[in-house]
Structure formats: C-alpha cells, structure tokens
Image 1: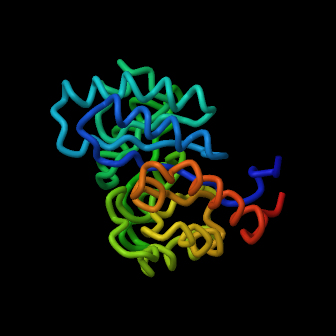
Image 2: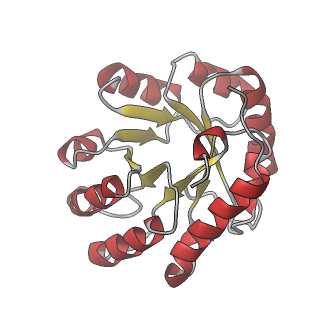
Image 3: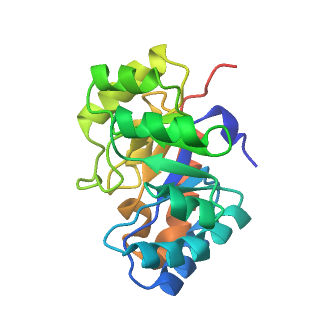
Length: 217
C-alpha cells in the first residue's frame, strides 16, 4: 500500500441519481477501487425529504469504506444522517456561520472561492479546507485553469488544505496534484460510466502514486 498521506488524494462528488439504491450501489462499487479521502453529497434537485433519505443510505456506505461523508449545504440532514461534515458552497458569510456552529464536531469546508481576495476572506475563517471550483463544475476534460492557478498560489502560502474540482478526464487529477493541492475532487470522471467507477478510482490512485509530487513533512 502506498503512502497516500504525503500526496494529493481523491475526493469523490456523488453524481445526480434520483434512485437512492442505485446511487448507493454505484458509490459502494467506486469506493472499492482504492483510496478516497472523502465523499461530497450534493442535494441537486432532491426535496429535503428525499435528500435525507439519500444521505441516510449513503453516509454509512462512505464511512464503512474509511472516507469522510460530507453533506453539501444542509446542516439538519448532516446531523440526522450522522455525517462527518458539511461542504458549504456559499460565500464567507454562510461558511463562517457553519464553522461557528459546527466545528470542531463536524468537518466544515468549502467556500467557492472565485479569486484570491475571496480565498483569503475564507481562509481567515479557518475552515477545514477551501474548495476551488464548484461540485458540478466538471464541464470540460481538464480542470478550470483559474482554479489550478488559485490552488497553486494557495498551496504555496497557506496551510489550510485545498480541494480542487477536476475535469471529466480522470487524467485531470494529475494537473491538480501538480499545483501541490492536497485533494482533487472528481465526479463525472469517475461516475460517467458507473460500471467503470472502481477501475477509474484505481487508475487515478495509481497515477497519483506514480507521478504526483510529494509533500514535505
């Protein structure tokens, strides 16, 4: 087993699937593919009740695989589903409120930092991580160049870990790793063909093992 702690690690964003059983099966299969640090569960178009149902089904699957389960946005759903944390897609005000209420009991991160000024504003709140991009922002094969540039700048000067949204190509994980970001988030790159999800997770981990830069202790 490689030492994944000293290189960029994978974060999965669960795809939009209305059937919770199918979603759970696809996710469990992907998690068997290899190391995953955490899994972000967005609400997409689900009602609050449906989102609760999905969260209660998926959170144990995520935790059983040794990953952290992060609920996007809804603190009540996170609490009831016994998730590990919250992913906040809003700006500093929303993130600051969540940090104040829920740390250190829950992991709280996110922020949707769109430029250096906003990133520093978010950093002053001391979240557990800063997210560059949007969880549904994988619309091209490669990561957004702006997010890569922000991550490289951030990683060079701030200790708070960052997560960067990758592209639809699994190889995009390496472009993120080369910025010295601690985490790369993938969604369609892994789940575009659900049957291939475990193989893609394995391949991304192998790629990062072989080529990702190592962090200094």
